[in-house]
Image (cartoon, rainbow, N blue to C red; front, side, top):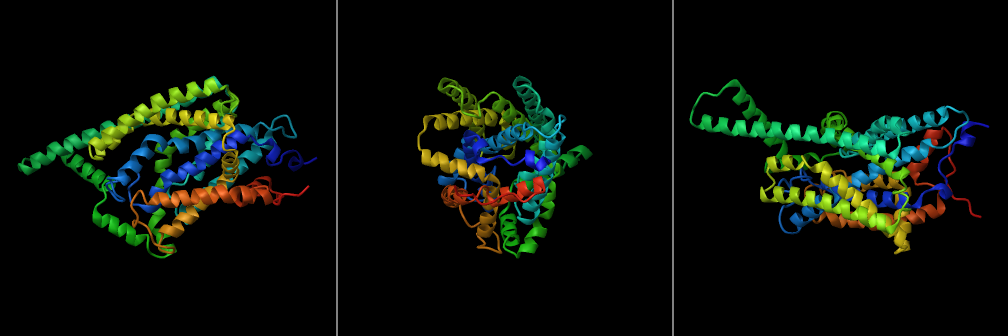
Length: 435
């Protein structure tokens, strides 16, 4: 009997419905955040840059920052971590489990390649597949830890990430204060030290990077309205930074910690929606009280300081606290929804979206670059922030309708099928066989 006979993709009967539903919610929720990157220039954290920062535009920014910033990505990362356990827990043809390990790393290497294609050729600099592939290789080593140690390890990693954010904040604060004082001396025509000159240059560069001028917005819109290959070359350097410097400074810590939490939550049965209603109610209460209180403090400070660089930088000192506990609250609410049996048609649609998460995630990108880039409808920079959500809701409705219909006739989404076939080096059955 061959490895392929013993090790096959998860069948429908083996799937955990609650995990598919949570994944479906996370997949749709991710677009709430990503749409800003698709349609507006440097507006993700600072709506003053483009897309509008008052009225409905400000309300949309506030809602996203309060309830969704980092949480949908957090859910997705946790489910990826849980998936590592589910994938590697299957028996292989030998006692060492080397067959499963081979398949797992082959699976991640293909995902890494998909991530490169998604970033450089499909033009989405916010893509997460490349990071999941790399971080997943590290998370693999933690798969045998018990839940308590996984949670402790994840907490330590989040503390490291937070300490780096605090370090960055105080460096930025020092640069701002030194540059401000130096500029006053400059106005008075006093002699500046070499250090003061350096901090003026550093702060000016920071402002240039964070605050978009009307001319910069206009130039970016022009660049993204060119032909496909021109846009590929225009974004290549930015994509390189995202998948190297940014990945190891920010994404790595964030993603690894959430993957480990996902492993712990799977082992504890939390992601399976098998805990009591009382457990999930307490979990939601604790998660939201801590998470939303923190998020409210951050958003209030940012708005009261008119989205200044320093207020946004300061918000990252408590970023992990707010977003991790809010994510925990979301998991509890979704679990209660699943356990309630309410809106079964919606639960089935969400589960179908979750089962096709890879395909639907890439579909987000294909639809959005077609709408916003010059080789499509050229809508980049032309919509207000709140108007972007007409597109989001339309994509949601489409995927909630099409995903369950697709899965009536096919076992996997098209990209899930391709990924599995490449992982197992064997063409997988695609169509559902009728009984």
